[in-house]
Amino acid sequence: QVQLVESGGGLVQAGGSLRLSCAVSDRTFSSYAMAWFRQAPGKEREFVAAISWSGGSTSYADSVKGRFTISRDNAKNTVWLQMNSLKPEDTANYYCARRRRGVVGSTNTEQYDFWGQGTQVTVSS
Image (cartoon, rainbow, N blue to C red; front, side, top):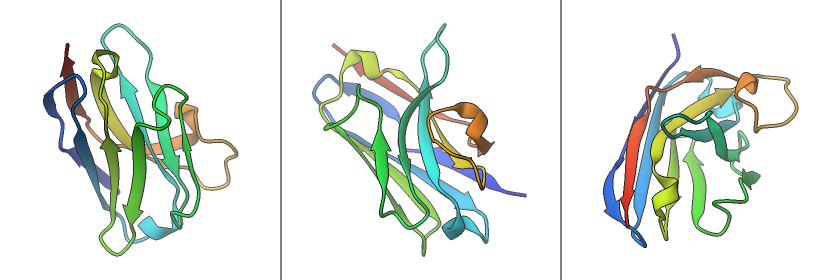
């Protein structure tokens, strides 16, 4: 069974940085694109960033472009999300997810088949 475990969340002041990690127990990890989503209270889960299986291609939501960086190490079965210049509106529970094979696109939750339990990020003003 595939398992994704996020870590690295916490409380940070506006303008600060955090680095989220997602450890994946999956022998085929290197074959799958991965992504980060987030969900704030009372809001729908939204796309944050995605990375191809090789790490050679990335994409970002407009709201985080230039501030967040997604990366991966296939030898370590890990995906990271480096978050800089954090804003109060970045406060949410952050989830990593594995994208289904053969799907087109990367911003819809239905394109992903396995999810972690989430890690809370709180940015104070």
